[in-house]
Amino acid sequence: MEKITNAILLGLEKDIAFAAYRLPGKKQEIHCIIQPDREVVKVNIEDIEQYSGFVVAPFDSADDRKMYIIRPDIVVSENGKTPDFGRLSDLPDKETDEFSIANHEMSKEEYISRAAYLIEMLKDNALQKIVLSRLINLPHIPGFQVTDFFAALQKRYPEAFVFLFNIPGRGTWTGASPETLLSLNEKTAETVALAGTRPMDDMNWTTKEANEQQIVTDFVKEILDDNKITYQEKGPGTSMAGNLVHLKTTFQMAAKFVIGKAGKLVSALHPTPAVCGYPKADAFDLIKVVEKHKRRFYTGFLGPWNLSGTNHLFVNLRCAEIKDEEMNLYVGGGITIGSDPEAEWEETVRKSQTLLTIVEKL
Image 1: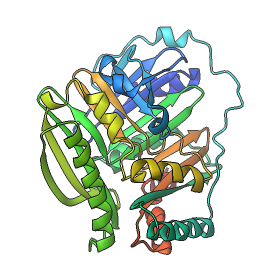
Image 2 (image 1 turned 60 degrees about the vertical axis):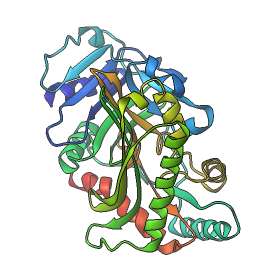
Image 3 (image 1 turned 180 degrees about the vertical axis):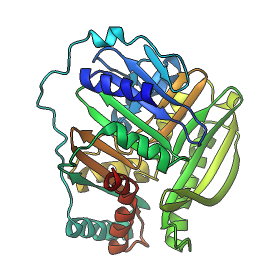
Image 4 (image 1 turned 90 degrees about the horizontal axis):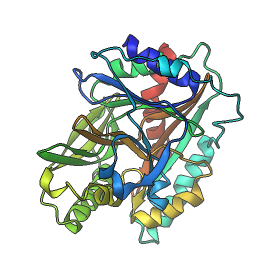
């Protein structure tokens, strides 16, 4: 971990593009890719198979269909050889700038009011589901070190995709996502429908959660069918994610059905009803109206693509935006006609504990 930590600290000191990550699983190795400059290009999502690197797409890529690619000019692996950081050390240090992570923070009363408004809209609208998110601002965490936070996430959430990335001018983000958007290797591909949330100590699924997850499942099936992809469906089953559980349906496919159309598939899937709503376009437009904050990279997607045969994209959930000792923690929940506003607020509180418990123990 020392090599990875040094790479991260150097990347932050120079404010260059980098991404450190660990795929789900206790025995997965930690990697860090570094692009020794500050110009991260945006490319079309549908062209993803033409690129190699760490993909980062904001939520708004649902609109412009663009994603960032961090180039793998320097690759650091936990168990690999230590690379020559000389070319990085010679770069100028981070310039003083006015970059801010300031964003609108909803109060409990505001969140409950907006949730109630959305539930009423669902009663008289073709909309079946919409995801309402919020953020929690921690203005000053004494002695906060992002590398310590990243290491703690890995230990606490071994079955999640744990990441930390920096894009100059766009900020530093870290988190532990439980949701695969698309995984692809030479033989197989996989995507999931993950929705519905219960606390670990109360896994009695209600009709509301079952319906919420079914909307996502039906959406994924529709996309796969539209792309003429043959798949095997498994679930729904209970999937654990830290202090929470979700309903999860897995879709497995032969790689031959996805290779050559991965970009088109990702573009069609993002954002799924799990993080946006359904119908997708209507929910996306309504989110722009009811949420005063900018989601930025929250509920976008990210992951290593075409790196040593690895192609893994995850939805950016359970994540935080960081600058120095300040943090914005992003959470949200699915609103359906069967939702209760107070319960929806409590769900976001439980989701926030994923990262808050780590902060409290640092």
